[in-house]
Image (cartoon, rainbow, N blue to C red):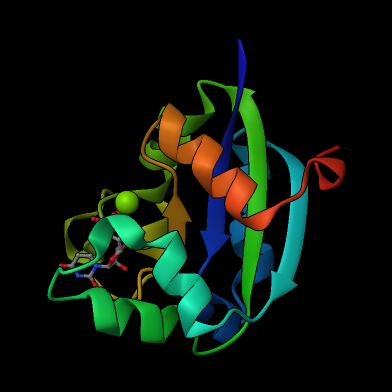
Length: 138
Ligand code: UDP
Ligand code: MG
């Protein structure tokens, strides 16, 4: 059954001019783009989004990085979207990411790793609702 997930093309990838190439990979993999917007976010917004990582050693660097420049927020849909996007993204550390994955192709480090994807149904629902209003999902 069609499922929705949430994704971000992170500031490193936007800065490098990889937005279009990453979107092409996503569409080639069969995802429908339900919603898309490019914007900059505040550190506070990044902290709220990543609240599950509060207290971890990388939290400060992560939230500073995510608020360092424009990013692209996405809602994606396909059968098995959540797991399939995680597979397409590759491992968090690009050094461990499989050939052909987005992080292998576009990420430069563990912190600046090009793309975010929801890790489960509950997080997908929270993350979609955090960035998008119902009327934006078409
Ligand atoms: N991160 C980091 N150092 C770490 C672990 C994570 O900088 O040791 C960053 C990285 O950008 C990662 C994000 O924090 O994508 C969220 O971490 P998570 O473990 O949820 O990885 P993901 O789900 O993005 O693969
Ligand atoms: Mg995660």
